[in-house]
Amino acid sequence: MRAVVQRTGWSEVKVGGECVGRAGFGLTVLLGVGREDSADDAAALAEKIAHLRIFEDEAGKMNRSVLDVSGQVLAISQFTLFGDCRKGRRPSFDTAAPPEAARELYETFVAELRAKGLPVECGRFQAEMTVTLENQGPVTLLLDSKKSF
Image (cartoon, rainbow, N blue to C red; front, side):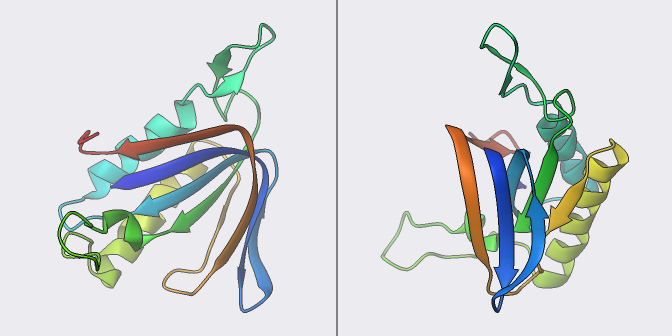
């Protein structure tokens, strides 16, 4: 499971011009699910993201998590995080999970975040979405549940 985590002042996701998810100060998470991923990966990544210390404390150091700052999360499914561009010019998505499995693990990830007390809004699975956000810092991190990077 892979995630692009951004520290954001606000973010929203629209489908066909209609806002389907919006979060205030907190995190915007783009989540990709791989063929080899399991519920354990979803739980581990949710744990990591919920406690990731990327918000500043009084001294200006990144020492607080989204939980510490009472932040919100906008979680958006994005299978293209498993696009392999090493060969040729068209990405291969062979390592991305099929839609049914990806949906289940995406929903598990969201449920894990919510179980930690985080307010989580979502995009619409398999929809063409427009994401708008205000990245603060900017702070953008890449995470992988298999620790491949």
